[in-house]
Length: 280
Image (tube, rainbow, N blue to C red; front, side):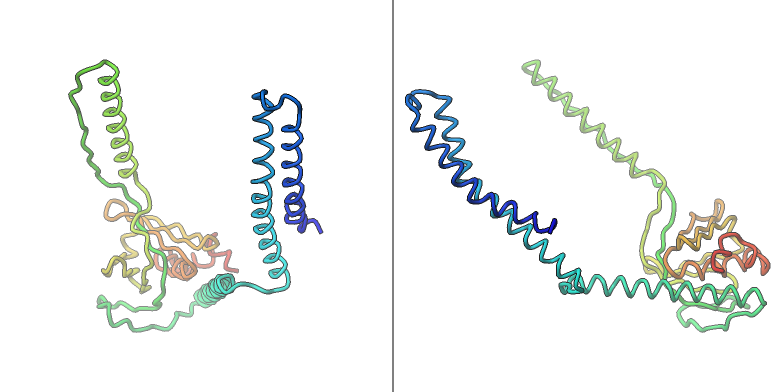
């Protein structure tokens, strides 16, 4: 019953505001001397506006609240609009994809612990190095961490005339220069850039990412640090001064993390790494 009060109360206010406002305005106008009293005249005008506009506002609130209550009632019985059904379908598909990717990473870790190597695959777009074996072809969200050099120009102006005009011109110029300087500082700060979906090939020598229309190679031998966070669906790899840090995120980042730990830290690390232990 409580949810129906959201539209019942404004519905009741439609006649109350109309008759109350009109009756009160008429009563004030019938008061002796009201026409010569500015305060009473303004009060009567305000009450007349309440009687005229109040019902319209209450009707709008009633319609909006009624539609919202009706939709909630339909949702409580499993009825959804086409857009809601589409959103729920996408979420369900994403959940299934995440569960499947997690299960795949679990199975890979279990097989590596008992020294079983996953089967090799062929990727015709990527030319393999000597002795290179390709194991997985998956998707991930790709990003790189770096700052950039940004330049900005300062403007100056010559103002003459009334002192107020000169001060206003100088202030506007100073504010403009400060805004451009702050924007340049923000744009130059190091952050995750180039965010985009990417195709990732996992081999026994490197991670190969197709991003920005190019195949980019990240050898395990060049990695100086790795941060696999499988429960957060992320893997961060550092390369010292040779390249910007790499971020791979999404459901398949757990599988990529397992292989990266294996090929940077060895077979024992697959079972010992604290993050990978969350795979069970």
